[in-house]
Amino acid sequence: MRLAFGTLRYSRLRLSLILPFVALIALLTGMVGVLWYWTGTRTISNLSQQLMDEMVERISLAIDSNVHMSGAMLETAFPTGLPAGPDIAQDLPALRQRLWAATSLSGRTGDYVHYGNIAGQSIGLLRTNATQAEVRLKTREQDPRTYYRLDGITGTPEPTSVEAATFDPRTRPWFVAARKAQGDVWTPIYIDFNSRFLVMTRSRRVLSASGAFEGAVATDLFLDALQKFVAELPITSGGQAMILEPDGSIVAISGMPNVRTLPDGTPERVHIDYSGNSALAATFNALRQSFDTSTPGHRESIAVNVQGQAVQVAYQRISDTAGLNWLAVVALPHKDMLAGIRRDVTLMLALGLLVLGVALMIGWRIFGGLASDMRQLATAVRRVGQGDIDTPITVARNDEIGELARNFRHMRHSLFTDPLTGLNNRGALQRILEALTRPSPGQAPSPFALLFIDLDRFKPLNDRWGHDNGDLALIEVAQRLRERLRADDIVTRLGGDEFVAVVRGIDSDSQARATCEQLQEAITQPLRTLQGAAADVSATVDATIGYALYPRDATDPSSLLKYADEDMYRHKASSRAQ
Image (cartoon, rainbow, N blue to C red; front, side, top):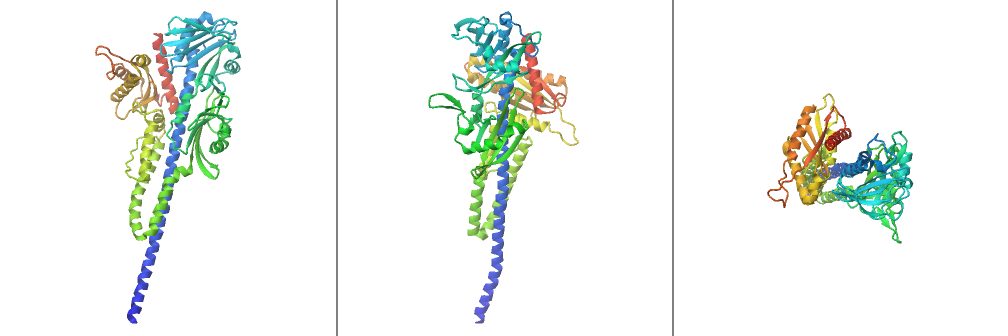
């Protein structure tokens, strides 16, 4: 009896000691699970929001690149302050050369710049390739337009055909809009009859020597490049990237076309109201007021409820002096952002309930590594937001956290790296310049030079040797720029044949000009990587370089780029004049 009682007391004592320990283990396991969920949710939400903001910024940069180029084309065709005569025929050679120069700026085939006056005369130049163009001309009001083939900027136009109908520029929307506006103005977006792409026209009034309205110059901007850019953004299957107009019309969108075909074969723009997507409609309704109330250029984020599901939306209003008013939008459901972390938390809690004792020891070990990896990811997200796009991520796991780290590295690389040359891209340059121009309390700004490099004679090389050799030439030029600059300097490819270099420690014109000369000397050396070239044949390109000094010339990224770009164009114009 005593033995049994003693055994019972021992069992009760042992149970009384074990139960608190088990309860403590269960409590700690639950706390670990909750802490893991809270930390993981915050990190993944911050990371997803950072990537959404980067995508919105990339969309806005793509829009700005196209819009800026159209304004530069109008300025080249009719520089501000240049008067127009009453008769196109009297100034035809000079006008034709300016139109050729305007359509040469982007290097795209199909660029079209045209001018019409109050006398009913008109001239337009359409680039058919790098060395040829089509001129559409009428010098008498009652005549139809005659089409000419033009070989080179100084070539002699050769007539090819005559239009059947009479074209009157004075009745066109771009002419009417320019006559009423004081500066540049955009026409509403329309569908091109031949290509079925979305197009809008930018126009500007041209004055006579007396200051009276004489005519309008215009250029057509095809929006298929924006549609392709948005469609190729690296976004999850549940997400959506788009560019919207205030009335709900879609300019560009991922996952679907921006133009649909009606049963009778007529093309029609896609609108939010009949897209068949409730998430799009809810997103647009939430953003409708932002077309008028949000600050242009400032990125914002809101949460939208779509049929009981939360959707995170990042957007930025895009506007310009010509009347552009768009929203660049990226939307991602919360369930897609947090699906992986919820699955992991459920698994951890289930295992903890089955094997509490072992789960505590293993859980702490897992949590220690997980917390370190989460902190590393969180630090990387914060550093990227501050402009440091090269923060190393050494997470090496085979679970969802490792996949998240790999995806973040891949997406960061795709967001900030030019795929052809391996240089930084436009988005990376924006982040770098924001970091370099961000004031530090109590410290003087660190000077640097921003060099805008535009290759000359690249299009003839591309046409003669082919696009593959053109790509090899760009890669070789990029390598030469890297070799001539220091390790802490930065080289970026903006796109096409344009590069930007950030050279630290330069605070004078003499230093900047010396650096420009060194880079130009490196670029103009014969190219060594072209394929199919004979041993005695050499190919070269040249470059025009403009620069801006920080903080002397400008103190923010946009103004620095604009200053260097304008300086480059001044050098290019001076070279052409010589």
